[in-house]
Image (cartoon, rainbow, N blue to C red; front, top):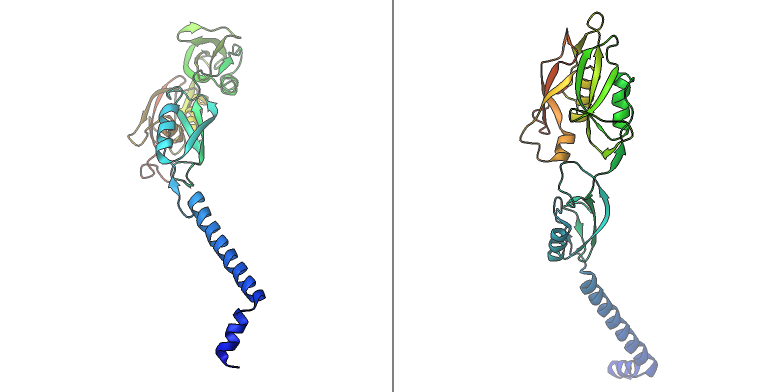
Length: 266
């Protein structure tokens, strides 16, 4: 029997033919499924997440739709000096690569500030009053010194030059000024602390705890928004730190930046 006849006889066997047919059908189905999945999932095709920060929800939704994704508001916070209802943060973050149709979670700035209760600060020391205000989410304002037997004893608490009673409900971050005692015969002096290299809120806190006032906060051009201000670092202060005593209630100016080239090494 010739070789040609043997091959014909082999492929002419119905079992072999059925196996070959099944193999071909399976291969076609597998290849077809892979092509289909690649089309549906856009295999290896990713898109970059836009930056929705400071957009309104409507603006973010339009931008997301154009980019091939969708957004959903999942949380809200209150950030002072930021536009109400604007996008505060997002997940995934701007620049991340995702598949088309991905949902982006948004945290927006609340329409209304969080409400807090004003504590009773009268009779507390300055440091105690600062700690109490910070724990309530309130901001220490001007330190106003008047003659009294006990230095740094809180005599009155003010909001906008008016007495504010304990128990009042106000917005978080409301500024509370403190009227403090000052005994000129004993401890009427303090020292200017060294806050160069410290972050904004830490520096302000250190100044207040030394019984001094913030005269000016100057942020350079690198500070673009409120979040930048929170991350800003003091690169200069006036007057400079000194062991020469100054009168409590004196003013101190701080100059801040987020530019690493301006931040002095320590």
